[in-house]
Image (cartoon, rainbow, N blue to C red; front, side, top):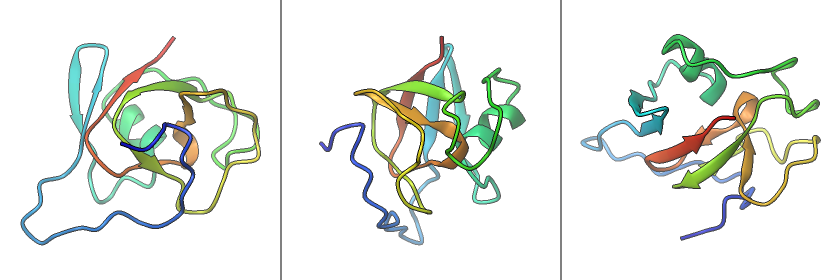
Length: 103
């Protein structure tokens, strides 16, 4: 398993019969849809409150803890500082089922 801060920009390999990735947060299971542009949009669509001020990885306000799973940044590494185990929801997409901690 790669670390939460693996910022590889290679997209996940999608197989035709593969189920969509699930996000576990606040005891909810949310499915990341193909139409979701990023994790922030997916969480908002599921009525999960996540703080943000931008949608481009600059400010870091949407920082959450990645407890399990893998994500990637399709537009490259974000510019905002993130600590070990943290991700920015505004510019990340799941590569696998993930579990998040939002504080």
